[in-house]
Image (cartoon, rainbow, N blue to C red; front, side, top):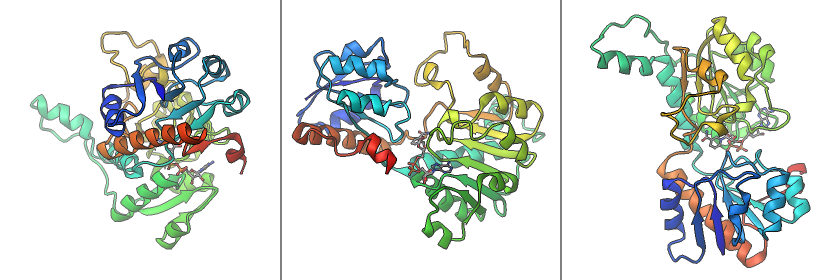
Length: 335
Ligand code: NAD
C-alpha cells in the first residue's frame, strides 16, 4: 500500500523503514502535521499514518475520504485527536498502537520526579558555572512518601511497581482497579481523597470528556501544600491557568510536565530562533520548580521499535482484510 506518513521525524524514517524492510509498503514521509489544510498531501495514498498532535477532526477526515484514504493508523496509544464518529460515517478505519513499552513513559515520569525532588536541572547549571553551594537544592526522601497514581493502566501500573521499589506508600484512583496492584498493597481511593493524601501525584489516565481539566482549581486547592505534580498523560487533563495560579500562590512544591494543553503548536519542532507567542507556556517556563520536557516519554529504542512494527502490522492487516489489526471504533469505546 501507499502510505502517507504525517508528522514524520528522522526516527520515524529509521524505525518504520526497519519494520518495512522488504518494502512491501510504499511509505511517503511528510514533515507536515496533518490537519484540514495539509490533508491534501495524502493524494495518491490509500492509507495515512498519524501521530499525537495531528488533528483528525471531521473536516480533515472528509478530505481524506474524498482522496480515497481507507485507513488512518496512529503511531500512538491515545486517540483523543480523532473524531471517531466522523471516521465511522466516512468509512475510514482507525488503527493504533494499543501498548508499547509502558516502562518507557513510566521511567520518564519517575525521571521527572527525581530531577525535581533533587533539583538536578538547577544543580547541573550551577556546577557548570562554578557555583558549588547547596542552598535551595534540598530534597526529600522518596522512601516513606505517599504517591498518588491517577490511572493504573499499563503505564500507571509500571509507575506503581517502580515507586514500590523506592519504598513509597502507593494510592491510586481508577474506575477499573487492578487486582494485582491491590495484591501488592496499592490502596484505591476516589480522586478527591487521593489528592488530599498524596505527596506526589502522577497522571496516567487518558484524555476523555471525564478527565479533561480533572486537575482544576478545586482539585489543586485540595492537594497538600508543597505537593509534587507530574503529568505525562495529556496536557488537557490539567487546567494550565489554574496550575499557574497555584504555582504563583506557592501551593505546588514542584511540577513536571511532558505534555501541555496547547503543545501541538510547539512540541516536536525547533523554535529556538522564534519568539514563543504562547504566554501561558512562557509563564510556566519562568518557575524554578517547573521542569518541562517536550512529549518525550515514549522516546526509547524499545518503544519506537514496537510502534513501528505495530503500525506496519496494522497496514498489513488492513491490506489483507480491510480492517487494521488494532482498531479503535465508536462501538469499542461504548463497550
Ligand atoms: P491504559 O489504557 O493502559 O490505562 C489508562 C487507565 O486510565 C485505565 O486503567 C483507565 O481505566 C484509567 N482511567 C480512565 N478514566 C479515568 C479516570 N477518570 N480517572 C482515573 N483513571 C482513569 O493507557 P496507558 O498505556 O497506561 O496510557 C495512559 C495515557 O498516557 C495515554 O492515554 C496517553 O494519553 C498517555 N501517554 C503518554 C505518552 C508520552 O509520551 N508522554 C506515551 C504514551 C501514552
